[in-house]
Image (cartoon, rainbow, N blue to C red):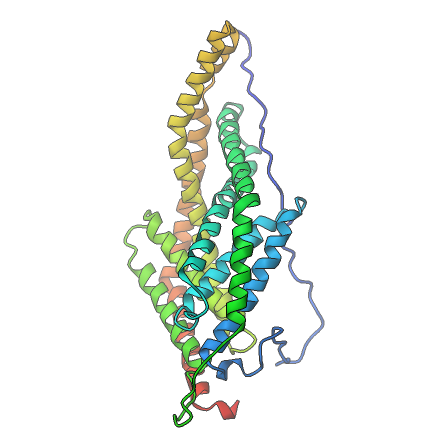
Length: 376
């Protein structure tokens, strides 16, 4: 084919959720303002039994997940899928953390169904994140790279549609049934107390202290054992541990002094590990795409030849998705190196130890409060 080579225009079509708005600066407040406690959570939550507190927290997390699920009906809500996925993940994390306390209310099949729903939403969310990244790359890509970008975008768009269709059907009904039964069982608590015992029950403060300390230690050990920064599986596990620590403390910030700084610090670590995970996921996607692109291209050329459209066959043969895929992979590799440098320089050389130290101090304070609840 003679003349100027023509490249297809980008075909990316992604949702553009509104960015989170920073809260407006407010008027000066007293140094230690009274904190608002979440609805339906008693002011003495820390000194209730750990089972009662765990049930109350689970009911609130379940209510949030049900509200997020209803938003999926609004196709104009770009954050609905993400928020539902996060709500289910928070619920699962809470049920996992308090598994001994909730064993009489939460069954194995409940956990399995929630896991299936989480996995089903994962593919769609990963596709959305990848498409948003591709949209940003489109702005300064050379024309010869657009074929690869378009091909990968079409593949991700198809996957997002498939995930949305699967979620609209049986999976949502499964969630509704599971949520309804869980709420019924969590709301009714039957317990026995030894009235001759020094303490009638294990307090939530004591259980939360133990969990906070163990979650922080697990995170420190996991990141400390990562010998190679290209070990995506180990980094992903560290990200999960950071989320578990954050989700453990977020619901009780109004009750626990100094929980908020730990949550904020954990969120920053989680963001770095999350960005790194997104890069690894898309790099794996491109790795698998090379063979798929070759087979797809061969099929297009054969189809054009079969129709006698030699001009189209020549054009397809001269344009390779591989050039664009290699460029995209190269950009991801650069981002990966920057994120690893940030993780190593900022977190592994100081901030991680500070974070774990904060969690241990918080756990110590909770134990001290547990020993003297009347002083609160």
